[in-house]
Length: 114
Length: 113
Image 1 (tube, helix red, strand yellow):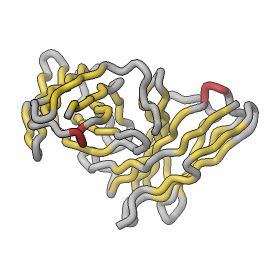
Image 2: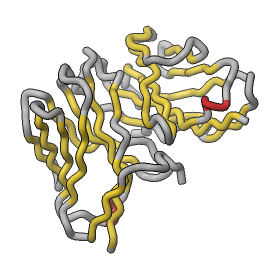
Image 3: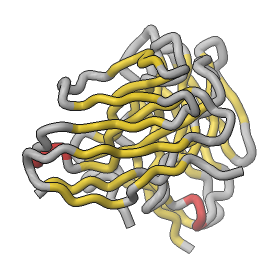
Image 4: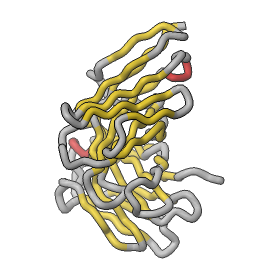
């Protein structure tokens, strides 16, 4: 069974641009969460989607947004990129929204803002 | 590979020894905890979890201990192997759903052959 697939793996953007990252969850998984990982702040929760609805949102500015499609694939978008947005963006999928459900992470998208 | 933390606490152990990685969590209302392992260039990988109504849980070569009184978690790895070298994160879940995990800063485990 294929794991969580994130595309692209690497991305370089210029300040002020916008970017869209994609996540395909494991087949059958309906819950998708996004995290930002930086050396300074570690892993921080961005948002969680289930059945095309945002269920939880972390403490990030409105420039960060996301969505989930009917096939459970998810995208996140960052507008007006800042240098500080450079990070590894990780997506995790799980079978359900229930708390004790194991989350499987993708390899991440490494975003560099110059 | 990916650098997941430039100034992480590091634990260096000899192959075959036991490793103990500690984590202090922040919220006394957290009721579900998970340990993840992250190797260079990869996303975090689930190791073991524990609910707050337990104080110990064992897996294959790993044991998690939970002390709610002092809000402390530990991960014990028996007979540590070179393949265990990675960054280890604890995560707590306070919300009602699977998402919204609060991760610790991580500990880098280095296993010497």
